[in-house]
Image 1 (cartoon, rainbow, N blue to C red):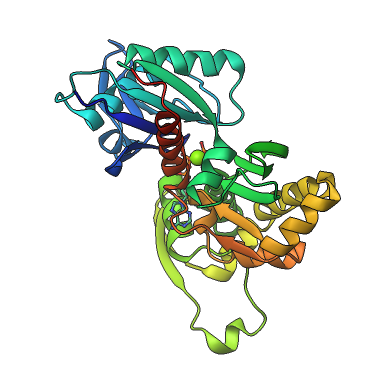
Image 2 (cartoon, helix red, strand yellow):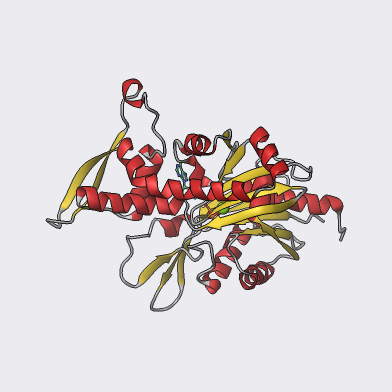
Length: 337
Ligand SMILES: Nc1ncnc2c1ncn2[C@@H]1O[C@H](COP(=O)(O)OP(=O)(O)OP(=O)(O)O)[C@@H](O)[C@H]1O
Ligand SMILES: [Mg+2]
């Protein structure tokens, strides 16, 4: 009988499920909507995300993993169960082996909580994997060699920076500045500069459509500047108002937040032993996570560190793939059952 082996990237922004032999089969936002009066869950995933900022008083849409930690355990457990069942369906006879990658800021207690929730959800065995290791495997790096690799995983809630060699993390840091903070910075900027109140989903839309971390000097001559029309509430009149935002403005809005990430990369490089630092200078820095899709971030990090920087092939699925490959690795080594 077949046992399905599964890798799960339990991220603050999204959850991805990878099944051995099938690849990434599920990708949904880590959002749960529930009824505050009855405490019943109304929707999970994409359906719940659409409710953010649009719910009547008694329905609340929450992101239970918000700051890279599990802020609401029982909701996380239900969400995890829902996605595991959705991904494997009802066809399996044997309980799967599941490895889960948790946000690196998770404490031992939280890791145990995820492990328990995964068992509850029907796993036979659970392995908890460190996010940078999973990201590196998913980005196609051979982590087993005695060679330094730097991986910068910019998610929704946290940016994890790690130097990996011989299958382990040598130096690392995790900062609570990532994709969601880009959105927040845009909300603040719009309020200050345009007296416009916008929600976080609108801010994310601006970021994805025209946001940029870096503008080259010859930008104005070569490019027609990207703009987007945004509707929000005029803070002075209280009425709806439309404002045209340019990508140059987003760079201004994002400057402080992106520098925090660059500084964190710097601090890890400073703590890296010289031989490994030399390897990194040779091989470059690899970016993963949805946050690294912000235009110009690669160029910004490259300019500020002087080290060649590249984005992994599919940065948003790298962690899930890496977590799944870790399962394959376990099963090849085979504790046969
Ligand atoms: N095209 C894009 N351009 C810029 N940002 C993007 C793009 N697509 C997604 N993002 C951002 O990526 C972030 C989510 O990334 P990801 O799914 O890797 O996070 P996560 O793994 O759930 O979070 P974490 O690793 O912090 O737990 C969000 O902030 C989202 O707005
Ligand atoms: Mg992640």
